[in-house]
Length: 587
Image (cartoon, rainbow, N blue to C red; front, side, top):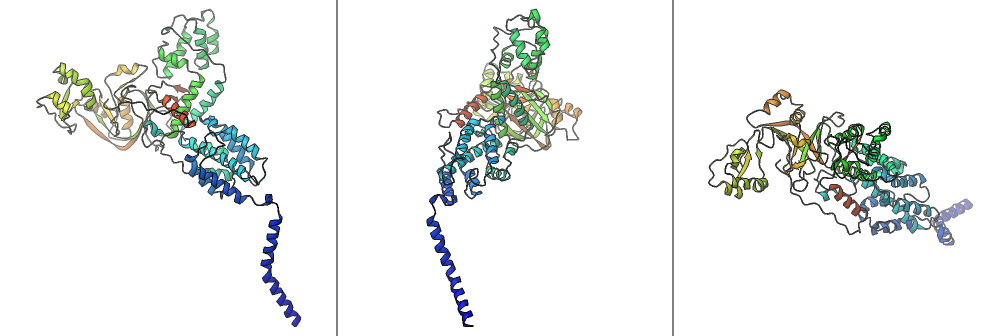
């Protein structure tokens, strides 16, 4: 019994002393080991936190990453502020997929140079030779790749520049980039980074069409530079010119002329023959130009566009699509300003939209704005409430020289706040003084002289622009149609009215025609508002899957080019300067 008690007592003493002994042994082991065998995690964590706090990464061409700082902090916090791409347990697949995304950024109209793709590949190759104890270097290379990927993901998702710099309305670029870190971490963990572009890029069919077209032009851009066509004057069918062989080659490249038609020219190769004329007419018709076969200034500019020119225009178009608001399904109306064209879709997937020519605001004075609004109502046989700027600048001088000017134009004066159904005030002592003082406003009565025609389509907006009919139909035959004061004139107003009122049973073609010929103004409220989008793009893929390229009538491509250059080289002394124009209003 005494022996057992002694044994038990010794065991208890040993148990009590075990933690102490283990601690001593651990300390002896720790101090006996070389420094390189210590766990790297604490050093890595400190290095990453320090680099993220500095918001500077000198390894990259753009050292300042402050605009991506929050997303990067979130990304590393989700990974315990440890290495994401390098070190033990980190898959090489993620690294390769990330580098491939950056290298292939041009497929989405982005520039791989902006993301230091080749530089990062060199860094990661160097990182593979480093020991785990090189915490500072490993952390720096790891964070550099994360910065580039966050930069790329944000650019692809919301765009490289802010549309508000171009006075775009708040609905554009409303997408948030705050979820980029969560999304990246999810695809890193699942090792599916290659799927990111499909997730981040705009979901519009137009974007995917442009992406496909862009790939084909990248292939063409490797061909030798073609010489420009230069005609001393407009070239007309049947005329002779030594540049006809080059014109045929150009039409062949554009797919408008067949190889046998080029070969068939024979001894008449300098003659602008029927085959070449028909090819030019097809090209003109596709671009919304007058299809007469005459190669004038605009047709010549179209023929002289190089693959590099078209690549830039497509990239601008893709950038603008990243700013585009998501529209609900159902009817919607689009106007592409430089194309002078309107599309009315019954649904998102409508393959046969209503299309028509339009007239937009003058380039130098009254540019039609980009907007996204909801059409609430339309007015048949509308009054034209003449904007004061138009009255002062254009009509008062005529009134001063002709006392009957207002009467001859069916223009009447009403109180400043009068509704369209109120009677005119004919008892003004001094018409000119009343107009100048702003105590009255001028409006033109409905009728054949009214520039709004027989119907206008209203979607309230601060620029006070709208879609409307016009009595001047001949202007739609012009190639360039920036002729209005900012509103958009439509070529086929009756068809547009049928589209807008398509779901209202009390309106059909007959009742619409009656309203458009009636003696009085009639307002019709829509049961469901229709989104209206005025946008600006010089590259557009039409229903036949062929790209169209339009003149940059408002210089918006050049402004965007400047802004993108500044974004890629923020230290460059280059500022974005918006063109000064008068807001459109009135017609």
